[in-house]
Length: 276
Picture 1 (cartoon, rainbow, N blue to C red):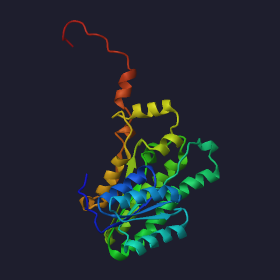
Picture 2 (picture 1 turned 135 degrees about the vertical axis):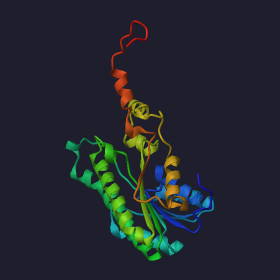
Picture 3 (picture 1 turned 90 degrees about the vertical axis):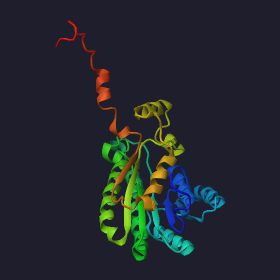
Picture 4 (picture 1 turned 135 degrees about the horizontal axis):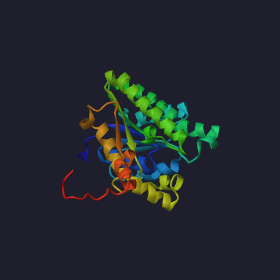
């Protein structure tokens, strides 16, 4: 979507960058010329992405990181700066989710997901933001979810945390704009990734119903999210700030009036020509 090399000289950190949407984002930013620091709790997820980035000529670094632990986050940012000299871009993609009715959700389950999504996003933003303030430049993109405003029955922990991240996005966008830091969010809808299909929608019938609910009648591709992230962190997105861009094929809108018409009785045929 953007010219290759348009992020040359920039350094990006992508959390949760070893699989799914995060992997697509890391590869896209590398293609656009950025040095990419890929972070995740499991090193085995990171190494293949780093090798692929390096094979494409991008600078890359794997930093195993638990974003729930501030000390590890600070170490991640320090490693990025030591290797590449600066931190220009942060994509807060690390997330956690599983299906559980709210009444059955344990304290540990709640804390695990909100710790990654809400706390982790703030910890990473604060640590990277300090470097961005010093250099008077920064671009932060938070990956959220349409569940933040539609609600997420069965995933109250994740939906609540993502809603908090949207509030954080808007708040930091205002606070940090004087330092030439832009903060935005991207809200994916149903995206076809191995993790989502296994952890959230393992039932083929549920997958079919979910896909049919999307007005464009398909799941999204991780690259469709990565392209929007690329726009937001590039010079072409410089006037976008504090916004949430939805990429979901229109699924958060539901079927609306079309659903209503599908259950209404058929209108009676008029008689007497066209007279009212």
